[in-house]
Image (cartoon, rainbow, N blue to C red):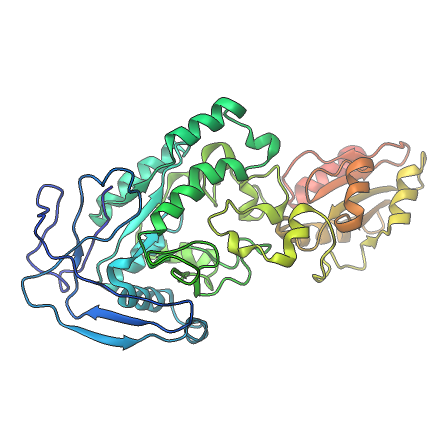
Length: 457
């Protein structure tokens, strides 16, 4: 494994680190010791900034990211700093800039923290880390199924920042067993969790066992269903760190409160390299078989695992975002108490009886277009403006526009009788035909929806 290292000229001068120049007799300082489970910790912070010593090879079967640091010849000076309660710290930093949050994270954890880089717009994290002037580390999960463009982007990022990304790989024996028993694309049939567990979650778990904190690019607006309450810093609810046990690992999310458009404004302003897939319509980027471009009116996470429900769109790296009381939502059982959507006087809200009667009619006075939705679904939320505009345009035209909430107790009926596959599903009930016609396209802008209606009415 190769460790990513950078520092500003002001932090370390006259020093360069390469694979060939690593010395085995360099002193490895204690960066810090933490006892997070009881919300109290003591940190030993060196007043000298240190850079990471790259390593040519790791000990056999030791896949964790164990820290190695090189120091200057000056004697090490340490001081004890009382670390705040991290829930309180999250509140204090809630309105802070990403740069300030990144600086605080690197200051507190030194060499025991690393940035998780996916090869997408989270390259902004690396730029923020560079701007702090502090040494930092970067790691990434190579699942073996990334897009070629992503691999080329990794190389470009390493050259741009003068760093080495530490790549974590899945266990070859586990991958072999999965593919031999279930094939290369089993996730299309029984869900993505098993494949992600082998290719992503377990390698991440090994990586984090060598750290006391990690930095992610999670944003609240990425997935309203699972990430809407992500704090800027938290005790990781799922993974363990170097000391083991709950509370041994902190998770920093410096851009949690930043809108996606502002991330892109920052990347452009700083002339940061970006993955070429973004120019092809990809927003959220993962493995090649499970990632596709998003279309007009779609939420960015709709390009991931599109064959599954919106509430299940986490690979397991951020499983803690899924609330216990939300498990029924993930599995599709039980409605939520979220505010309703598609609210307009031009829209008709259909009850179970209403949709049943509409479906039974062999001849209708008017044609209908109906969306089957769930208010918690971010993809339904993303098309709300387009669908409301469609309703207003069709008012008085002889085509009724309706909505039917199809989650919870209505989901099984909707699957069996209304062709519900995933949310949202859009049906057109023709005037003189009993069978509804399902809208097959995923372009949910108002022009595409209007073209669908005009072709059938």
